[in-house]
Length: 364
Image (cartoon, rainbow, N blue to C red; front, side):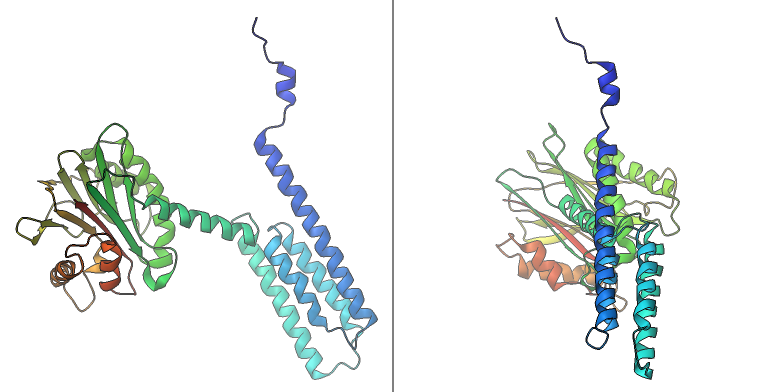
């Protein structure tokens, strides 16, 4: 006979989310209590030995509080530090212009931390927690750009560089192998803007596009991505994209682009690069947009490149000339050695002030 769970016991069992919240509250309360005790001890030291203990010692707990306390606790702690600073002033004798300037700077720092706490309240987490969340999001977008395991006769690499060397970029790559399909699906996306300005939109779109790419048929991906962007209602909510759907058994491929530079194809037989022009509007601007496909086949030794305009376009150079230069560099840098080729090309091409992304696929 199967035992049934006790409904009263189940109802009394705390939910995991509630337990985590209570733990965070207790941890924050302990941190606040330790900081208050530490600040009081520092203030007592200043009051007892004003000649040897400077008032700037109070900046140590203030800095720790700005890093460790949440947005609800930090304002009250800053006020407490300011009160302790007022007590410390009473022991400063004589009050010289240098002391007055130091007091002014200390109160200015308190005001800056207080203002920061109000801005941080929009996020709802402490400074260290907020930074760890951003790092985690950054790592997730980079991990989605990694290529899935492929058969031994295939090589696929991706490379990404952001404007100014920041960890967040408006360009990103998503690659998946849908289960049971025997295909490789890759999309290279260039979000409007560059660097950190476009990084937040890229973080959101990379997750959404990753889900769409593995769940939809190749012909449906760009229309669905276009509809998703239209629903966001962003003022700068457009993006360009290039989508590759590759059959890993036959080498047959389809390429669709949305306002994106054309893919480049190396024919191993002739040793020449060519471009595959396909038609499609920029994502997020036109409803019910249609995206034409260019078909082809990758034979042994062939290669394909998908890339963003940061590699081929500059204010002083037309995109057509940029593509010619990229193909010339590919002839030199990929001759006989495709492993590591994506990184070599990205480092050799484009502007350091623009985001750059490239995917290289080679059939061995």
